[in-house]
Image 1 (cartoon, one colour):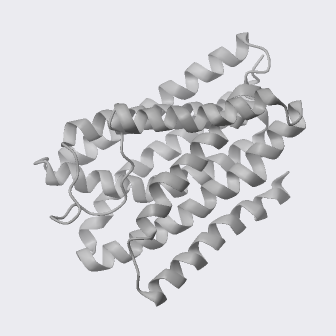
Image 2 (cartoon, rainbow, N blue to C red; image 1 turned 45 degrees about the vertical axis):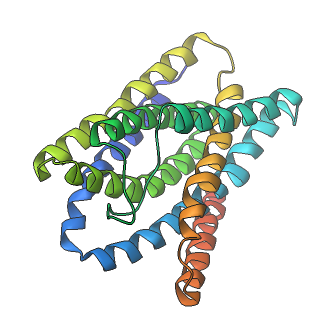
Length: 251
């Protein structure tokens, strides 16, 4: 049975992540060039955090729980495969840069659908991590937040580019983010009835995070070729990993 404290941690964490969707309004305070540089730094930091959470927290937790089995490897690969399918066939595309002629985006409503599905999975991932252990849930929540900040800024730009007013863009972005709450509640309910549900969801989450970092975030960093900016990206990437290393002390 899922403990009340895990419900509380999960719901509070998911609501915190959902409110990150409102950060898009801050982009109006920056010029496009400054915003791009800030986002590239945040994307680097998020990539490090996702990889760090996967290899420092999620996979060790899964191995400790059930051993490094064929089953664990399949769940990990399934996470990579499912996120590939979402991106390839449902046209969910993580994006973290402003919309320009050189960097076009899909239709605004298509992006909302994809982002809503993405948020639904985020809720599942956070709740599943808390079911495994509270420190793991905290680490995963931080990794998701660090990834969501540049993601939601990008989504806000897409909606504005698609003709939404600023208020409407913020409102729809927030409604999309609330789907994370549904995903979390679903996992918490399933966790009550399915024994050791986290044995599947923890390595599945690691696979999803590895896919997002390797397929969506790091390729965007390669588009920047200036040595000094590339070096700063590397530093940010390492800092993201170090944040996950520091969180080991929570355990």
